[in-house]
Length: 455
Length: 77
Image (cartoon, rainbow over all chains, first blue to last red; front, side, top):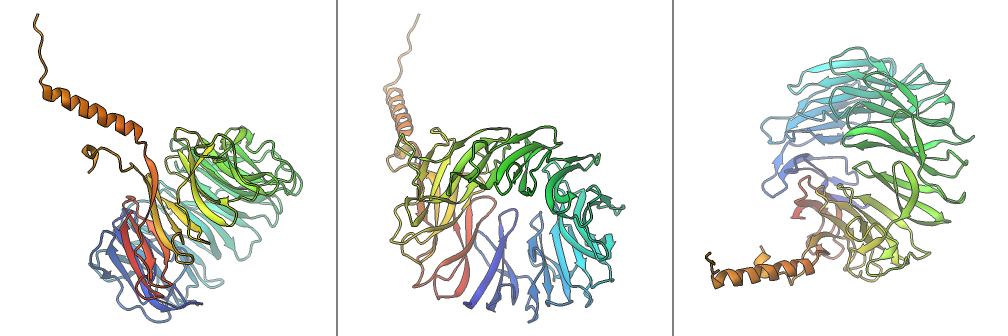
């Protein structure tokens, strides 16, 4: 492995003003010598931690994070064995780091999540067998409150967007099942969210709706090893089985909640629900009252390989091989209908020209739901380039190539869309093969704009 | 009934504004890609990168000066 020197990693503050980075030396990018904060717009870096003891690593999930109000940094240092401590330090460096979890030699893992507002934090501290693992809320002033203690380990966890609930999967040492619970931050008793599980059944993951009203979880609740999705209302605790029927051997693979105008309205999911091993796309209302097949007409040889629900909740972009092994993009609504091809016509042309050798490598929907950016080998078989298709005048059928001609054997490697939907940044060896550089693409007016309107 | 005569300067201003608006209509925005990372040394690369929440800056790790000596940069997006 190549050894790096200097900056090993970084994160950005939620308000976009500050970068936090850690430095070190060697093969392990999680072994920091010190952690710094620096203004994104440029300026002097502040050493937040001083020298960190050798042998300590950024560990756990996420290991390092900035509070929602962008005022504090949280990080976990661990020795890879039984010492793991959560620290908090102000980003302006006005005080030393302080431990927010116990500093004893009795902790195998600390996972944490900053509160969705302010600078409180919730952490799960996993102790050795029989010692009792803890879920703890630390309020903005630094006062801890133990929410739950269990004889087991905490699995996946999350805080509801309204900050009212901590949701977690618990794996007890003396139980064959993993159950989902919600606990409020006032320390009241946890509430079980899933129905009773079949023997050996488990809740494997969950998602919380934007309005904090619903939790959708995936579990083999009714039949061992048959994974379905279920919803539960956090207020009424009404539960709904969202999969009405499933072919023998079928499973839900993945799913995404649909939020419309900030309200949870349904779930889109991939499953071999109709034909075993044929992955279709379906949707269902959040209470299970109506279900839709979102990939009708796909032959039994086809599969939906990826999907993403538009942020506005009205549509879904998916990749599927309606023609065997030819994976391209499709658009459908969250309530069904025949999917429409996306980006199959080159801008300026009038006929579809998606080559039989071309596949979509990756795609992301713009935050304003009006376009999709995708990487594909459309113009040359062995060159991955970046394209846009969207509801911008010419319809979703048309695509526009974003990158200029590439150097010989150049490729686009990855991209990010700006949060304001106005552009994107991509990484490519566009100018020199094997030299990876950054490029941004924004809508810009051509040079023959009247000078009257130039800034 | 009286008729108000417009000054010639208003006429030419109107012509200029109209022409400009026509040019705007003709000059539909185009998507243009620009390199934003600094020219690297031999074998230098951009590694991790992220866009800040205001979309104004891209922050990235790169070794543009000495190969494998990683530094942090920001650039207006």
